[in-house]
Image 1 (tube, rainbow, N blue to C red):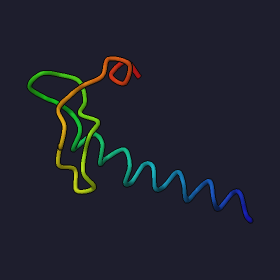
Image 2 (image 1 turned 120 degrees about the vertical axis):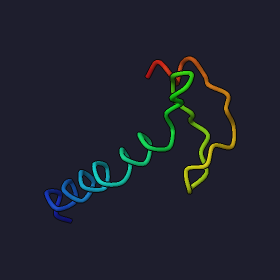
Image 3 (image 1 turned 180 degrees about the vertical axis):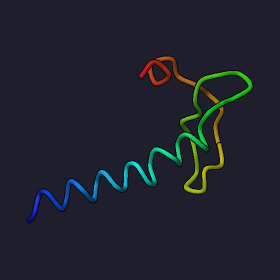
Length: 56
């Protein structure tokens, strides 16, 4: 296992897919905070916001 290649793979996945998905799909622009209950396509299925998760 090549850890350098693995770290590059994880970094690329994080920066190219994970972070953009959450920034585009989870922000609650009108009221602030973030939705955390999203379907795989980014659709919000529960609008409850938990303070401990918002603080992270």
